[in-house]
Image (cartoon, rainbow, N blue to C red; front, side, top):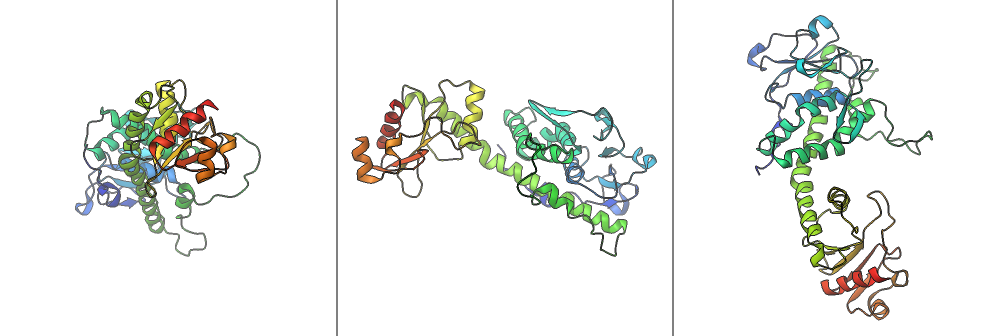
Length: 355
């Protein structure tokens, strides 16, 4: 696999943002292509959508035209978040019109914003280009889904006013630190004496760069960390039967972020029985950990916590109680314990299964 290049995020091709439709290629800049979105107050979805579409081969280096004039919009090569039309064959990507209910699919049911629409149609091309592989590569599809889930879907939901939780209760605190909020704060302040289109367009360009750089950070994370970790967890999950005949103990031969991957892979592979304990070596102490798997990714409760009588004990006292040499500790909640050796940690997990 080719290494990921951040070049597209750090310096998109000679970005120009206008409030009218200049002739393409003016002053030797631009590609002749023009992408439109609305002027006035901007949001994260059209800022990211404009960034993303300029990463494609078809719209690389395109100028961005910000207007609500339908006569100008009709002349543009692509239009995002304005115009009242969703028609990918004509590169029209608005989501405000009556009857629009487009979703990403693949099990995702959140109504799309302009960012989600652009990602739905061009995400695989963007990811494949960054990886240096063909769009039909299996990793491209896997990353396409993962990046939508972890990054793009939230922007779609926020722009469409969809709450994260099904509740009528007011939030216990205000969160104005998320990307959509930070992009919104880039709009010119009402107290600023300069309310010119030029000032607004410069702020929109900042919004494109902010949202785009964070998108690219997400891509880099998924390529360099998420995807390799998934491969490690998959291999260890498939070989768990060699660790213990029960199939309920998994050993990580190399520590990595494993929890979310384990839940997704168990569901994907229809694993039964489910994994109860994961063993891995602590990089600093070189001792071994035995960790109880939670009942769900966002829950602290364990599928099968370590035995209650072990909890809160340490060292010789714990070894005497378990009958297993080398015990180091068991947490008061029973979600994790430790042993000086792999063999000892495995015996702790096996004994816990029988309790």
